Length: 174
Image 1 (cartoon, rainbow, N blue to C red):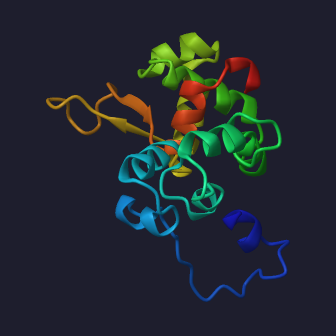
Image 2: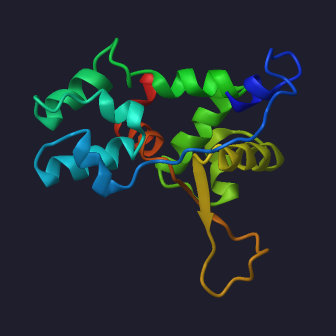
C-alpha cells in the first residue's frame, strides 16, 4: 500500500510531507475492542495480534470460538482469505511466499530446510525471506554464541495472523 501511495503514478506523488508507520496494538489495549474474559482476549491476540481491523471483526457479544469459526473457517469470513489477498496486493508471486510461510509453520526454520520443503532454490528462498522480513511477516533468531552475520539463522513467522493461518488451517485451503 505504501508503494502505491508514494509511487510515481500516484496522484499524491511528490506531495508526501511525512510518514508514520502504525504498529500493532499491545495486548493490554485489546480489551477495549473485545471486552471478554482475559482468556478469550489472550486467544484473540494469539490469533490476530494487535491489528485493529482484525480485532474489530470479532463480535464481543459472541464467544471467541464462535467468532473464530465465522471469521476464519467459514468461506466469506473476513479472515478466511485475507492472507492471500494481502500477499497478492504486495507481491508478484504470492504462491511461493505462501509455500515458504507454510514450511516455516511446519517447523522448517533453516534456509536449507525451507528450500528443500518448498522445492525452491536457496537463493530464491533467501530473497523471498528478505521480502517477508521487510513486510514484518517473518523474523529470525540466531543461536546465542553465533556472531550477528552468521548464516545459522532460524526463521519464524512473526505475524500472529500468518502464524495461526499457516499452522492451523488445511494446506488445501492455502
